[in-house]
Image 1 (spheres, rainbow, N blue to C red):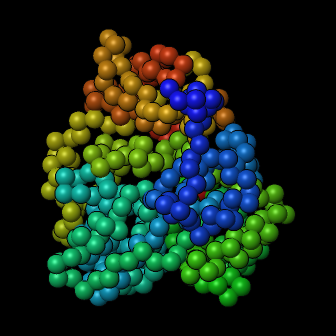
Image 2: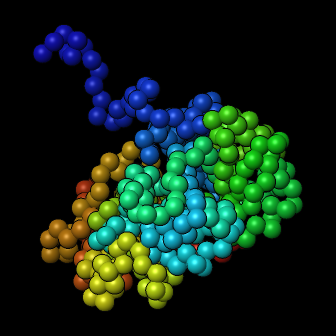
Length: 398
């Protein structure tokens, strides 16, 4: 062993992430860095700030105050042209004829086998223009591949647009300060186009929290991002605005899925409990990629499902604190490996360990007892209803 290796102080706790030119930067990258980013992950080939202070501190800032997030990593794929509606309908199982201009929809982009390729928020800006606000996968390439030789008159491109999220019960006063009372007229999952200091933006009544929230999509973001970031933060100061990373404890409470954790290419909508008629709409005649496979799954029933679990014993951590490096193996009470916990945390408000486990259909009944191997060892768990908080989504609609 070389003297250099012997002299290094190795740690198994928190290896650093390398900052260098090869990984892309959000238009808000240098703005958010000024607030003291402590942890990055990589999302859509970009550095993504995850923690600034402490996950529990950031959780309380979100549920009691107002927070600002750099989510410029949610790349915007624009589908435009005379065949934009028909092309978009090919991508998703929802009935796009029910998506009016000015509406947003949570959608699955599905593959031919019914697996979920991405779960973006879709925004319809014009009759012939849609944005897909992406989760973490390469949908631009998927869309371009489908469009190639399709014969459709459609343009697919990643546009220079980047969103920030303003989330929390005090979000409305901040948005009124920036955009006036008109912003309160945006219904849940709708959008409004306006300007901020002459900069064109799109505001949507959406977010990744289960709290009251907005997303501000900044056009020409490479030029305008810093100005908008500073204006939003200054408007938030009187409300005690805090810059935070995505709060996974709150999204787990609210049964909000995380692509790469709870869903992947081999997961279909019925397995995650979202095979609703409106989410996988098999009633209309329009075709979409994966329709035949999903019709078969619906007819036969899924063979496994993502269930809510309460886990007893020591805390399983905050999810973004590095305590859940990998999935937790799930066993039956006969100690047979049957599945895995995909997301878990200690909920500060519920004061219990909660999470999601993908298990065979025979183990999905409420009250089913399970054994889960956490970072602290084997712990008992039970299948419970999800979401853990606000099942009717009254909070974000308020």
